Image (cartoon, rainbow, N blue to C red; front, side, top):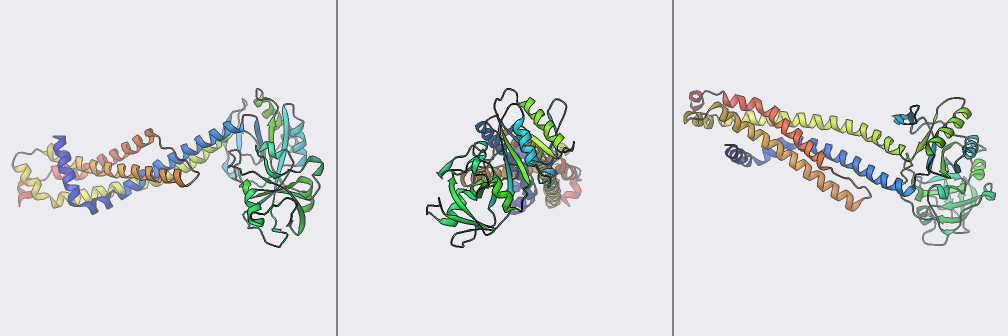
Length: 409
């Protein structure tokens, strides 16, 4: 009997292809949205986890802003996303105190400076570049190397030297050799000491800095360039050992908290904490997209119910004939309910196929690698099944309750 219902349903859908497709549009959008957001979240988490393993477990970041909250055991209990772009700053004193913590191998401060940049011929650099005032230890902190030339050294922290990211070097000088050339930052001349190797996005960077478009200058020179002060946004820390990470994190938090007068306007983040931050970010996004998808599915469900009600009206004579030759109310109910379910399931399947297509495109043409879990596909199709039953039951009941004599008239 179910097979017969399915044959009748598919036949009815084929007779009104475009109407059926437009009816399924809400379901398609809803399913595509849910599957894609979960795919992007899972893909990014896998990508970041892999990069964190490559980076090692000996990396810690002290960052301005109270991004996370921990319990007494040191476990992350809350993520404050609004503080990711906070205006609070770290200081040179913080850097020195972090360096002095037992178990810290080195600490490299990172301060961002906004200023116009041009080459020695007056060609200006585009505005999406970033100037980073730091120390030589930044190379090891970011696991970077110099492709040509060399990095500035600790005794040269007050000299006007610069090391360029590869994209900056190419934009300002093309394919020419840049070591020894001059760039002007705020009309102050800096001698180019080297060019860095190409960098991948760092999983420890919450604001997604493009280090390929960065200009590294010594910390002291950066202070002079910035009027004598610098707002340190981050301190990149490497540990001497990895078997006492929790202890070192607690000690770093303790000394910086004292330096800030007991105000927790900073965060000490381990590599594993970034997965928690990422989960929180995608939790917010997933909630938002789930709400949008829910609205889409609700609208799609109403559309399916309306179309089914129209279909019941159009097929009144068919219902009357079937009942007159012995069809029961349950059989009529089953016929129309199965048709509604098939309509929503087709919409759900199309939504999944669209998601797979978009995922394949992103993997081929971008650095984003979404990952679609079979569990998510199953949940999405299960929800569409429920939508089909809920919004198909009213038209099916209306069809089942029709009087055969009135229907034949």
